[in-house]
Image (cartoon, rainbow, N blue to C red; front, top):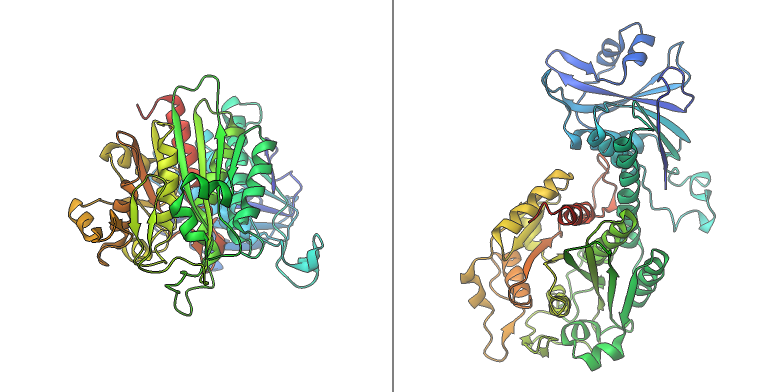
Amino acid sequence: MTALTLSTAGAATLRADALVVGVAKGPKGPVVAAGAEAVDKAYDGRLAAVLDALGATGAEGETTKLPSPDGLKAPVVLAVGLGPAPDEDESFDEEALRRAAGSAARALHGSKKAAFALPLEDASAVTAVAEGALLGAYAFTSYQGGGKKGAAAKNGGPKLPLAEVTLLGGKPRDKEHKAAVERAIVVAAEVNTARDLINTPPNDLTPAAFASIASATAKEHGLKVQVLDEKALTKGGYGGIMGVGKGSENPPRLVKITYTHPEAEKHLAFVGKGITYDSGGISLKPAGHNETMKCDMSGAAAVFASVVAVARLGLPVNVTGWLALAENMPSGSATRPGDVLRMYSGKTVEVLNTDAEGRLVLGDALTKASEENPDAIVDVATLTGAMVLALGDRTFGIMANDDAFRTAVHEIAEEVGEQSWPMPLPADLRKTMDSPTADIANMGVRMGGGLVAGLFLQEFVGEGITWAHLDIAGPAFHEGAPYGYTPKGGTGSAVRTLVRLAERTATGDLG
């Protein structure tokens, strides 16, 4: 991953391939942001005028490269837009800083070192700029260049990510600034881990392969890990996971990753949907809907990465991650529409649509997670296309059996820069899943399908346990052009929310 350091060096004297400065959108044109005073001086105080002449406005994510004037060691100045300039007594929003740093890092792919002279008023700003730069510098090149390191760029493929970032204006000896950088490095690294998993082709990331990666990484960080294979799942009565996975030659897995801290007073359980490839099963997806279905394990990737991040940060909270891994394929042994599955909880489910499989594997995992009676359970899943229709490609929905907890998770997500929206669980929709054959059907009415899926999951949460469901179907996989710190492909959605939830729980901020 890109290296990142704090430096007290001046912008004019530091040697780098490029010098990044911020520019805001003012009422009369671009405004040079704090942190770039020395650079502006090198342009004789005319940096804003030069940028204006080149058509730069300071709009969010806009990047403009300039040749450096005499007096600067870096040969290139990159001006990045921060969006509207704040009022005199206000600071730039943390997400604006995060996105600007990400845009700059993406624009500098192929460079070895860049110095970022963006506004760093406090430790929170340091965290935002550091996270944005590290997330923006991400690239997935594992399958390019013939497998030789660095070959992708040499052979005309994508340029390698920016190798080193130096944040100017930070205080390397300040405890808060140092902690901010250390946290950002860990969180960004694990978000990028989730991205790597999501982007890995499904022929290489089978349930067993995912379980092996999780096991190796967990042991590296001193975490306990338990993997239930198809024999253990069958013997244990995990009818949901086995029902989804039995149509594939790659059998399912349930992975438990446990982090404990000797001073912890609270226990969180994170549950992730891990469909490593989703064809829809017998209810086959139509043409044009299969190509990105390697991303259907994004929830499990987020849960796995979050538990590792919590462990690396040493947070005083116990966290258990559950990865419900299966491949949903059509075959002679696959579950059919009309089949009835007996879940781990003992409830029976009539499968009306085999493409509504995520809720089946999650149902088993939620019941298992509930047996440990955690203080709260959060599940994460690319669960429904209905949620994308409701909230778009960049916002995930939050449902919960506790209004206060739903609000807290929403506020946490917004705080870390992940767009989310609280959604209801209307009791009247539950009856639409009534089955004449089983305890419940895996489908209800089409309208409000995302809410119906949430109501289904709620059936498998232990009595009295606080629970939230994050449907990340929209933001988990980005098919358009990159923006800010968001790349094309896997995004690592929900990792930052889960980590901050763990931090808040550790400090008692959630009660």
